[in-house]
Length: 193
Image (cartoon, rainbow, N blue to C red; front, side, top):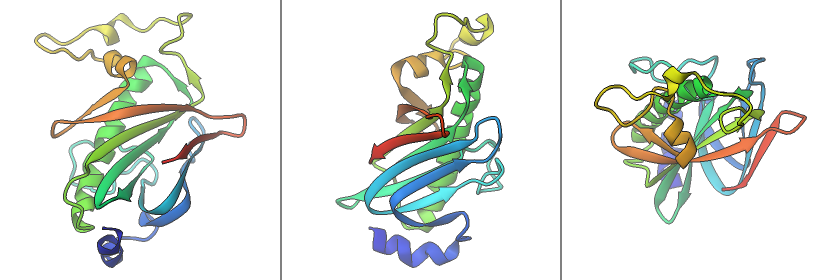
């Protein structure tokens, strides 16, 4: 499957979409969440990076976008990995992160079609933070973020998705959530994928 993708990489700006292997690094340069998320892959991946919070696809309604994403391949199947870096993670921050995951998910699906990937078999979202203030009992969330709109099961802040470790995405996809914490150097090492 990676060979088909390679033949289509010329359709993209190589600063945003490119092939990577060995160490995959997604970087956040904004001072509020500055750092790196590092992944190890023994096989080639297709990496997509957002620059300055702009989505790769201008026509999307969801203008927020995660810091990066990449496709890994195994036995003819594509696994989409979406990555966002933050500092302190509060419930309000988490609600914004979910929107960023959604924007990068849709952008990745559009790019995937040009790479001749028709549907990812799995999606995993990674959040690299410095401090977890959601599960900390010392800080309470705004009561508004814990309420669900009338007739809905999801709260405004998405607390249940954080608690369950599952991110609801458009088009009836659900992604596993992997939480990682940055070290003193600002690096979150997620290990081998």
